Image (cartoon, rainbow, N blue to C red; front, side, top):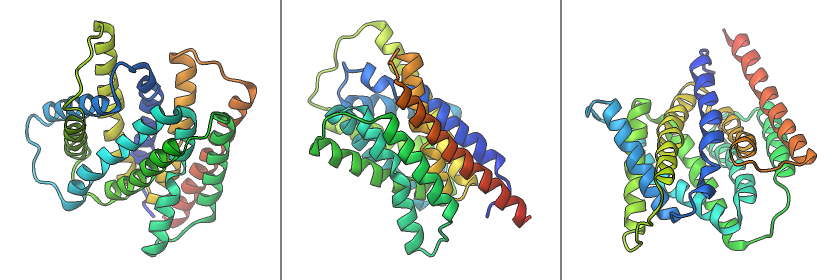
Length: 280
């Protein structure tokens, strides 16, 4: 058990805040295809990280190299899921990402805590209540499930990689941008207003650079299973963000689901703090 949780907690807070601000923009930026969004988000984010590192990207370990392959696939699954059957059901499936980490953990001998399962059930159940409805779509389910599996692998890689958070961000986003560039090479860049380009830049900085650096920090300092569950608080954060940013209306049941999710995350965070205190 890692004794210093504060860097991980700050990273987790960064995940929630940046996701809440940025992910609702995926549907707002409809002028761009999912492949083009990957390209712009990846390359712009990599450029920001490159400037931050002053061009000294340095040596990276094999787990960071693997994340270069996995992050683009996770992002593509997310975007395709959102476009196929909407943000709601896609987010519900993506919230089940910790199941992938739990399975990997069990196979690798990592201890599975009851509190982790309780926190996941409450969080996932709350998100499902908040985002209930929508039409079933096999295409959307398959893409969302693919995104969730890749997301789980990415979390494992972030936990094992020894590169700095900004290095992880740079190399992973280079991979995302290149895959988006390859997939969108035959697509014309749409003519959009300056406001849309500004929104895209905001999306790349907040939902790209800050978001992925926060992920790298969180999974460096928190246990993988618990970090994977707590990271899914980005789902209620996105719901709240869509309410304030896009003006989407939320029913009482939606707010109830958000509350259940936050309670589950709070319970797991409290348990993790107590567990850490007991091991000191």
